[in-house]
Image (cartoon, rainbow, N blue to C red; front, side):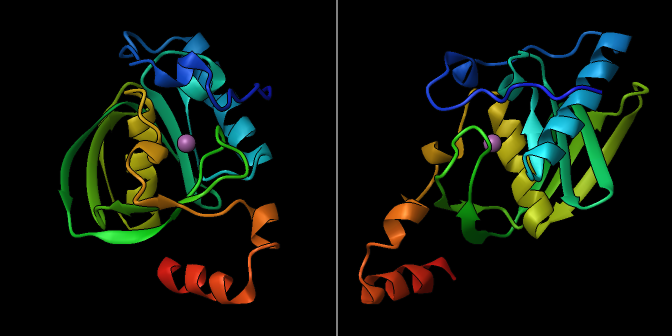
Length: 171
Ligand code: NI
């Protein structure tokens, strides 16, 4: 396994619609292994292939430490409910925003053996599935955020009253 470089900010790769994985080859398995290592190294809960410069429809998610979901050619087939909360992205370091997402998501994908499976998630897992599959269509959470939070370093300069307000809205 090897750590790969995470593309950030205005890299056009992050805005490109990815192609389906045509066939699972050893190269794809290496890509998945590297994505897991890269995600863990960056303390992320998910990573999409375009974030490491590969324009293929593959994501890894680890919202629960030790349980990694590998989704190849994922397709969201059902959503319901709503959740609101803070969201960030390894490709947009130092930023976070307030994003509404469905509270339940059902997604169909292939695993690395090429077998189709269905994953159902609520709360953080549902959020991660939406966030990561959006990456495959060149979408970032900032496109759908209700508003962005002040950067951490800036937050220190914000008055305590405003800070409290920001926290209240976060809940
Ligand atoms: Ni992201």
